[in-house]
Length: 316
Image (cartoon, rainbow, N blue to C red; front, top):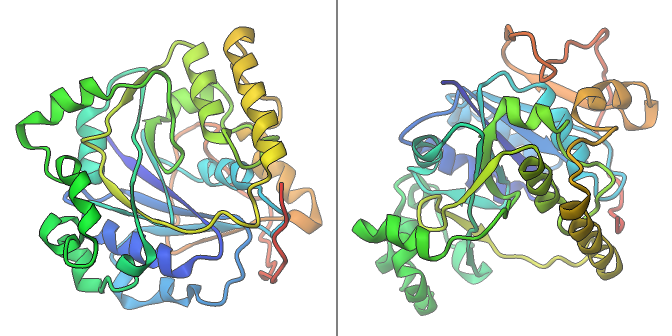
């Protein structure tokens, strides 16, 4: 089966570069990588055209910064996906070399997979070099322990060995979808019309998981199999406590209402963006691809030449 990786980012070129270095080291390479950029100032993202990353099948979608609109840019990115299976991660994470292979190995029909990441402090990851990442040294406990003795508490996650299956069972969680590390079948996310764009930061990923559950899609929490490092950072600037509380309440109601689809979602994301001059998205790709018939397909009627502009981030 074919696989597309969707990587979300916002004003973090250093993190995204590390994430793509991790993608270069994968034992199974994706057929497509789409970067979903929620309005970053493009200064610093020139590395995407470096020869170093030319072997990766990178595409990118970008729209102007209008506050937290991660779910909208993800829906737009999904419309440009062409694979059977979709893997999602954030641009401030670094995947272990078996990340894609593990997602594919554990994939099951009508099931989404998810897991958390290992948070790494800034004083540790700022010393990561390209070779450290591509050689996967950053996942070696002995390497991390030099500057981060506390990494010992993650020893079993980094090297679970024969205990991997048992540890996954012990730490099982019901219907939890983490947007920074999950995967599912294209048909399943089409069935619920993608992400709910009305959500700001806070439970915006778990909401999708509940709607998937409501249509009969099962979940697997694989904390000791889907391994990635998270480059820890402050959430100042986009985390509104009031919005977080409100959305958690909406999430609880969703379990009871059994709602499955959103009205303004995946199926019309590109058309709605293209119809609004101030929020038109830009899609860049080095390749022309032929897609199967699917709502995860968008062929624009005209080429938009919007240039990214720097805009101040505000709370959702």
